[in-house]
Image (cartoon, rainbow, N blue to C red):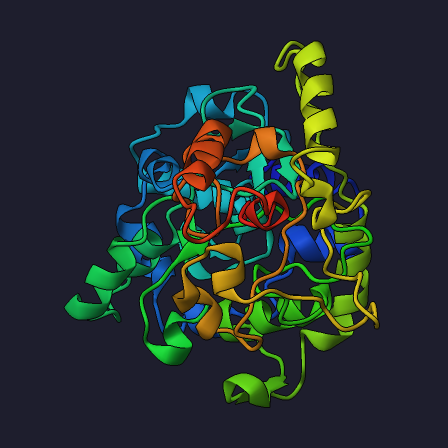
Length: 374
């Protein structure tokens, strides 16, 4: 079988033969034309071609979809050779990275939603396995990847390299403030209505914002609240938002692994959560947030930073200047916690709350529960 046939077979396997207008295909493979940023401006394709071996790609958190690989691919290709990375891109095997390869040359590259909001199960090797759509890629170091660009100056490189794995600042290129936040999960969104830490808008609002202003997609986005208005025709983003939304809403939270918690202790914790602690006053089942419990469910119910004991800077950069009560979806799966990752474990979350009596009176444990920003 020739290289082209292998590539087509791998693409069919990895996309499960999904048409290009399905939400899954859009989430995994649609760049929205953002090659105009990653290729034309940042020239990341040149970096990959010359110096990004698979070992380097894995080191900055990129993942490889094992279902897209021909048999024995990893055993027969050098993980120290950038040419192998180009072949992986030809096969559509690098999660969230899509490129055009002609001969042995990578001509262009773009990114998709999956680069930040998917990982793999490591079933073949660390960073190589079956896709896990909707899981935050907390190994990904977006800043380090951007800093590889020859178009980025030294001052900008210092900022990007300061972010670290699992963090991204979705407003740095808008306001120039360096204040990255954790990459959030994209599963368990059904019924939530507002996916950002600050409740700026419904899910498709944020998809549109990120696709146009962060990914560099060829589309249109306007929000006068943050003084951002980008218009590009043809709009390759807006028509795809409904299908993308439906796919995201279908991504369920992963179940807790067997033996990962003590059921008896969990029952005691549930009684405290719903009883003395009063956590469910804000983390209201079944979505475990109160963001749609205001007079108008289409208008988010939000909280001032000092009300929930959070750093105000991140909120002040947003459209709302407030924080949303975050849904407690699959907490075991995506530490660290708070929007800034300041709590490494759930135990650290509890300890942190106990150390902030000046911000949250002990009697007001419902306010304390709102601090769980994931």
